[in-house]
Structures are given as structure tokens and as C-alpha cells.
Image (cartoon, rainbow, N blue to C red):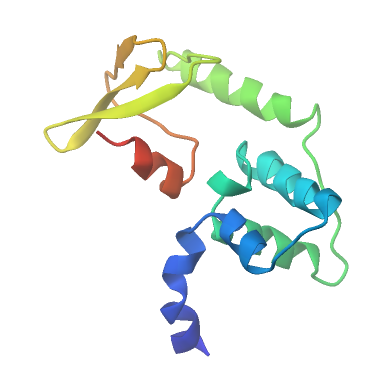
Length: 140
């Protein structure tokens, strides 16, 4: 069973939208609901959410006795805590800034190019909250 699972490993990195297409989901409500679940988990629609993320979440939902938890203060409280932590240690956070490209220099991420053309250089690191599939598409 493990060998069969490992053979399918690459599929876990593919977008969940591929599975939705493969399953030929036609019902608009179901498609929108799955897209919303992807967005709530990743901040991206099904086309940008890895199968691994969805499979982990769906498997977790169907465990016996499972309860659906949520952060006190909503998901925005998590973002606020992360921003406080980054700023506390001297980092900068750009809000509502779409990243077009992650800039690479000497084999490492050295900054980002934003959709408005600005370039932000990293002092220590570039952190992406996108999954590996989406992040790899942005590497220069």
C-alpha cells in the first residue's frame, strides 16, 4: 500500500482543481463550496491549492469524534499575531501587495518584485505563505 501511495506522490503537489475536473463535478454549489474550502485553507481557489492540503483536511474531518475548531478572534487574529511577531523582530510586512516574482541571487531568495513594479529586497529571508506549487511558479 505504501509503494502504491508513493507512486502517486507527485499528484499531491498538483492543484485540487484537477481532481474536481477528473471527478466531473458539475453542480455549481458543490464546485463553489470546494473552491471556498480551498480559499479558507490556503487563501487561494482550487486551482492554486495543492491536493495534499485538501486531502489532509478532508481526512481530518472524517475522523471519529472530530470537532471543527477555529481561532479565537477569527482567522484575522492569526494574521495579526504573525504581523506583530515579524515587526517585533525588526521585519517589515507589506499588506495587499501582490508578488509577481521572487528574486533569486547566488542561489537564494533575495527579494520580491511586486505587481506595481516595486522591488523589495530582503535583509535575511523571503517568506512565502503560498504552497510550494504556487511559490515555485514565482521563482525568477
